[in-house]
Length: 295
Image 1 (cartoon, one colour):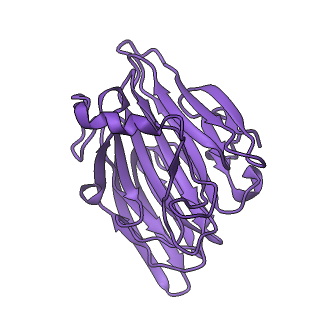
Image 2 (cartoon, helix red, strand yellow):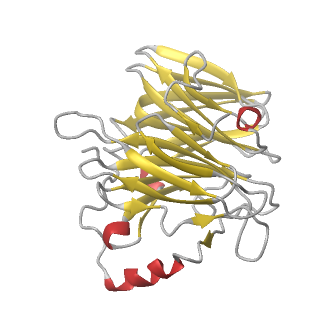
């Protein structure tokens, strides 16, 4: 599978996007995006993966069943990724899951290979840790809904990032492809949505990924639009660039081989100094772009 997957290129049935460890050519991280018509439903087995059901737009009911019984969660969801921080549901490995939606919608299913089987749970929007990261033109909002320290999982790490138009995020460029002090090995998926302009005109964003060393060669400098995905098996990644007039959203899905579920990154040595400039700058006043109330 190519590093850049255009909207619709990896669709299967009701799924607009299917990225598995097998199709990505790696071992741990995966992402599917389920699209349901009003009144529609889909049933799938989680298999070896722990999975989160995360509304991109619309609300749904999530039913999780296994040999010991079942759980049912009603997700309020949201109108779009740019309108609200959403609630979500966690479903464990070795379960059968049905997602149904009266009004229809699109639902991201970030997942990771799991060895432990944790209980199914509801994640309220009010419990999502919202971080304003960076400053000035590097300001962005990070919804840490499934990070170590914010939500318990076996291997899955997932966040949402919202970047105001004309700002850069995932900057300084960073990597997590070596097992060493201060760094952990994580495969990563970036899934993008781009806010339309005032007249509804669709807009682009941009993503850069570059080689971090021998055996870790990669070269991506791509325009991305809503529904596009970038796979990052290794390498320096960043910046993610929001064009003027178009706020940028991306969903990050990460997992790796480490015994510890940890997000440790190494900044690019040529650009790490940028972090030191944030202390003297204000956070972009447009942030936060979203909260728990629909806007």
